[in-house]
Image (cartoon, rainbow, N blue to C red; front, side, top):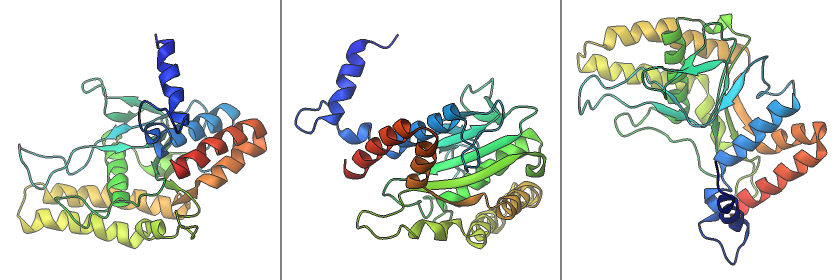
Length: 262
């Protein structure tokens, strides 16, 4: 049970003169995405990148296993799972870890969303400076498919989208994100990541090259063919909701405007 005082404290985030915590704890891209996904699902909006197939659901902060997981303690090549801002599809959680996302046996949808308000996608990680955030998400998606033993062509909907404002803080078109979503850039980042294992004569190198050929490249090709690797704007999401339910659209737009100034 959530105490009523929880909501009382939460509502103070709207007050500029007397709040008990920073407004950005509520008015941020994470909660904006949850509101958008809930509205699109509840209203049954079709023809949108975030539309739901039958019986699909969504989850925020899902943990996606990396193909470059550490093989021993302090493995400088390895990395932990990626926390996806949003996942839409037919999923379940690993019975052992209770947190790692897996695909259901008859899954037909698997969409991962990275949400941004004003920050950019990261250009790399400590162990791999050129391994950008888009490449890392798609690598983890390919690993989920690998673990499920399925190919993207068997699905009705697979996608990786970055959702961000149409304009940056200075009112300029938010075009900087798109460069990270170039297929050649993503492909190169993964190829170089595996090459580091090869240069170090790591035993996993051959396995990773096989994974690249069997799962990563087919996924990337699928995303390109179906135009499901791209930037989506918050404003377009709000418009899609508004067309179906004007009051819901106005409500989410008000939340969005506070996010832009919080």
